[in-house]
Length: 334
Image 1 (tube, rainbow, N blue to C red):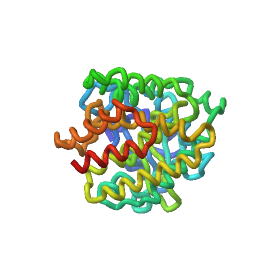
Image 2 (cartoon, rainbow, N blue to C red):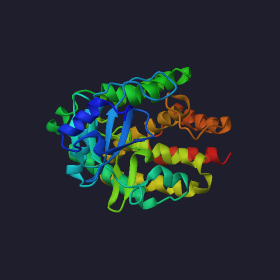
Image 3 (cartoon, rainbow, N blue to C red):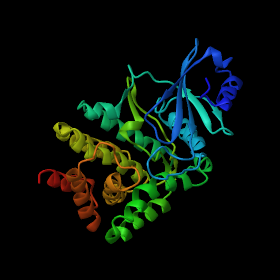
Image 4 (cartoon, rainbow, N blue to C red):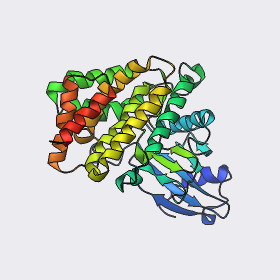
């Protein structure tokens, strides 16, 4: 028990989730870099507690405001109201300690999407469901003043997403600096709806009733094209991790694009697609040369494939997501 934050114990007792520390079993969960996460087992229930860290657990010096914990809870609550089951239920929130408790979803019934993709178990319908759900959340929060009040600024989104993925990458590709910084600024300036900010297979569970979104620490009012591009990026990257499933990854990419764009009712779908298509190469490059490179692309030849594809698309920005896909297929075949 010595490693457990006493403030966490106090918050759980105050919320009535535990009676004493001795009544519960605490298990530290791994996988995240931005928070301490505990699985807590009591005779009555099993749940999780998440507390934001000011310095992320990565090699580079990467800091972010702990207030993102509060915005994550807001995203869960709003998304769940729009699409029941889209996020875990919140059991307790401590705004002083920047922590909250939520339902624990058993991995026997809720499969981590990233693990499924890694092992070549590609469910194309899951990509379709994620795209449709995401569009519903975006559509349901466009122009909503009450939602906007819960996300008073986007500094956290800039600190955890735009700076490490686009701006840091610009410092390694100086000839593309204007393009990458331009994408960062455009994304920062576009505030249409509530976005998740980290729509990634590592943050999505595939449950019996559909996808469940986790880790909405970057949530803010922003550009919905970011959420779409951020997730699509992973289907392209996974082609290098599990090459045998490349056809299924690309079909998943297509399925998500189609199901998402069908749900775009707040602007012309072509306009949103153009923003996503031009942003995607920057995010693609950021996963090998930014502050948060994907852990499974270590071979320099594979990194160069990503660089060539991304640089070609950044040089001539695409307006269709199918164009990004086509450029990547061409690179994979060389």
